[in-house]
Every structure is written in structure tokens, then in C-alpha cells.
Length: 150
Image (cartoon, rainbow, N blue to C red; front, side, top):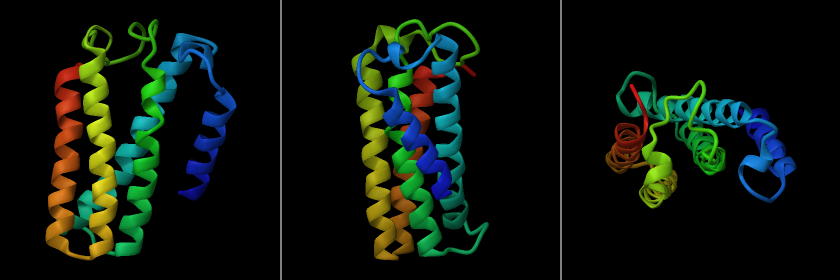
């Protein structure tokens, strides 16, 4: 887990500054990047979701580590939604580019909810953790409903 986060961090730092599309050599690279980031984020979030649903035993350390990764990944994907990446192998809706402030608002809310979940896990209160997982899942779903094609 930690090695994935380190690799992604190094890749993000290597991209440097400038326009978002300039950070990728081709629009398809940005699409692949954001899909990969979202996949890793979903995998780590799902592990905690499974714990709160009683499908796997709850372990606060494992839950905290998984949410740390998901929270970190949530900060990386947004730069890859640059102009020019709306076409290709993507399920992104046009609304991402026609309603950028709404998209950013939901992205920011998703990051905030993952941060709240990280705090809830430290309480070891399963009720607080379940509420925080539900809130984070709802922001993900809101974004998918508004900005992702089925």
C-alpha cells in the first residue's frame, strides 16, 4: 500500500507545475492517470466499507491506513480532468467542463468527507465511523451521478 502511494506521489511531483494538460504528454495519459487514481482510491475505501458492513473484521490500524491512502489519492485525480480530456476512453460527462465550479465543489466535499472519516476512525466508535463512511460514500455517489456516464 505504501509503495503505491509513494509511486503516485513521485509521479505527481514529477509532473511539476503549469497547465493541467501540460502535465501529461497526451490527453489519453491524463485519462489513464485519473482512472488509475480513482481505482486505487475506490479499492482502499471499499476495504473500510467492508469493515463497517461487518463483511470483514474491523481493525482500526488497517482502516486508518486505507483511508490515508484513499484521502491522498482523492487529492490527485482532479488535475487530470483538463480541457482536451473529455474525449477518448472515458466515462466523464461533459458537465465536468461545462460546470467546473460544481465539479470542484463536489471534489472538495469528497476530500473533506474522507478527512472526516480519517478522524472518525481514530475515535474507534463504530457508530461514528459508519456515519462518516456513509457521508463519504454519498459524496462519491453524488459526483458519479452528476459527472460520470454509466
